[in-house]
Image 1 (cartoon, rainbow, N blue to C red):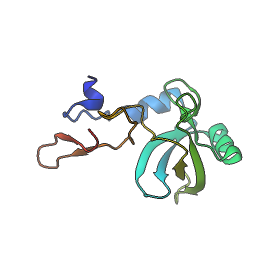
Image 2: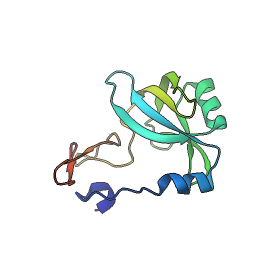
Image 3: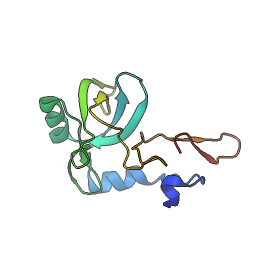
Image 4: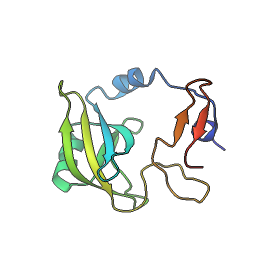
Length: 136
């Protein structure tokens, strides 16, 4: 079991943005929201190339900051996403994509039934800071 992804201990990476900026300075965050349920399903990064490909194909394409390359979400698993709408924040330094899954969910982790989940499948207990799995 991967304790970071399945454990109950809160271990936040507060240095993440500094690492991303050092490797990929020309990216902005993009929040990905399910168009029907309004659930926030992923926060990732995009650059101009990924954004333009997303707009042209209406398929969710992001920028992988770990691999430093285009990342068509779900291309290898078949769990791709149709982009229905794109919004920009007031400072034009982040985006919101409203998407509809063509199949499955967005996260690389799976629940006990072997089904893919959305990325926000754990809740933080505000009193104890323990993580509670919402999709075991």
